[in-house]
Amino acid sequence: MSPALRPAPSPREINTVRVALAGTTLSLVGFLVLLFFIPDLRRADAMIWLWSFLSAFLVGLWGLGIAVWQGKARLPDERKDR
Image 1 (cartoon, rainbow, N blue to C red):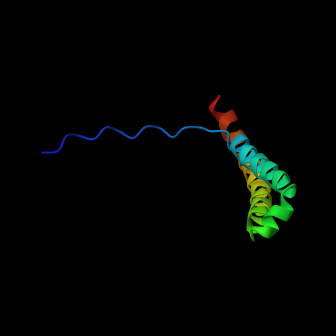
Image 2 (image 1 turned 90 degrees about the horizontal axis):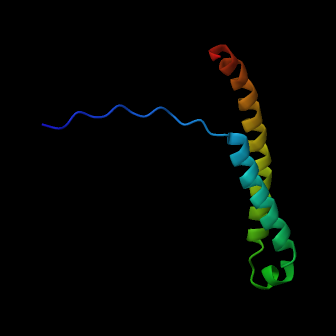
């Protein structure tokens, strides 16, 4: 016989805005650093890295907007509990 399963833990509340902001910031920093190495990237035929970091930054901005929107939508529910 198999042992009884423990109940699943409750989901953790995380600050998605902080996570999205960190990822977006790192993508922007990576893009800005790679701007100094454009000649080397061209020689190595690795310009994809520059555009990948730029794309990650833009997607991060989109994700940051979604995280802020979801955070604002969650606020009324939290106020009802208090």
